[in-house]
Length: 446
Ligand SMILES: *Cc1c(COP(=O)(O)O)cnc(C)c1O
Image (cartoon, rainbow, N blue to C red; front, side, top):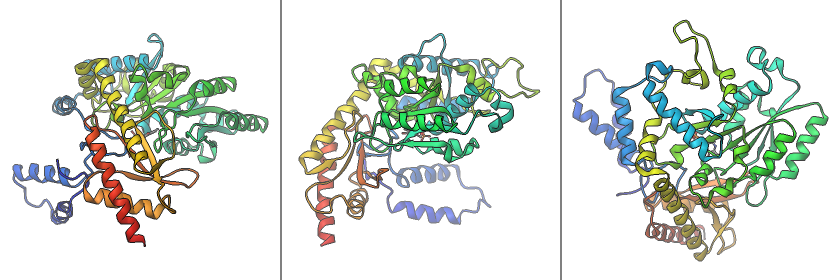
């Protein structure tokens, strides 16, 4: 299906674009053709089976159809009375996914979000509203002490961003070191908490990560839940990507303890073959969302208990749940599990093939991602060398992978199986391309 990365055509289209002034109308078929060519050649092809990339997926066809249907009907999901069917579908999905994570159907709630970033921010606001009821009115003036949030050093930066935007500042975020598998070190978490409490700080939130974005580290959720409970802190689990383990019964025990979280972020757009723009915030304390997000406006209903705008950072928004409904309804939980299971299996093949070819895997993870360096030579872990290897592979169009940097400064090549159609043959060809790029980069360097 052609190269994975942008092609030289993309540059030509960019030049065409810069000359478009929109003074004269363009024929309809040329408009569509321009957009379609641009999308085909001017982006990394996340729909390509050799895209070993940044977690985004090839959407299933029925999910694409659902997204188009939604665009055509354009229901508005601020208030339920305006689009009751769409709101009911999303609420049903929230309940069904909440139950997958072990929440009790009777108490759980949540909202669809644009992705994990919004879900993490939503959780932070919910935690503030829950742990300090006066915060909604008096803001940070009402807090019981210097606020502290605890995350692992490999956690997603959107937690830091949320703290900044909430007016707490990044200094409120306490960064806990990780072990070799990129899991938060529990004794270090306890030490920090004890020290902060002794100094009069207010530890109100712990964020555990189920699936770090670089290397797939899965925190010990049960242990962190016990610590958070001991200090009376809100526990949020960022399972934006690693939540996929909950979809596969034999892998779900890896997330033991997640049901004890006050809130969970989960990204169907990284795990369920739907187009971008579909994240989720699940909580077993839905009243906190209302406390954080309920506003009054003369033209909105008085009783907003079932209205999406009153429990989410957004106001008007599209029916993001429709593509997810299409995928889940057509595959069933069993079919969705089989898709994810297949990716995990191909991820295991990728890890084994890399090892056989003399690549050294740096982090053990149950998720289908490999972070690796060259073990066959001196300097095989240098950033410049690894960067040259990645560039050669991606510019050849044989595959797409990225270069990552861990919190300890180490660099690694990163390849992640995101496509449900990636086969053992794709893996084989991709690793051969890597081997070739390694040889060429070595030659180039000498
Ligand atoms: C991807 C990711 C995010 C951010 O999610 P978006 O959907 O890109 O907004 C947050 N946390 C983790 C662990 C992620 O992998």
